[in-house]
Length: 99
Image (cartoon, rainbow, N blue to C red):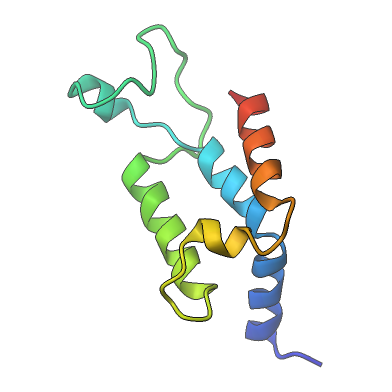
């Protein structure tokens, strides 16, 4: 039987694609548009439903996940997700349906 930290690691690893989708769906970077750095939202878009996070927080979280779940600690999140054939397609489909 696995100890508790190992169970958590296995649970996160087996659901990594779903975790990435949930993170991407919480992206709200109103500051980027106000500062002229991006077109992530339009002026008339409603305020996000909490929780919502800036692109910097999302990127840091995705970087952390890739470091924790790669054997060499150098693999990208795409490389990790590519180990399961359907993961990237599930992410793209879920994000495209949610936007």
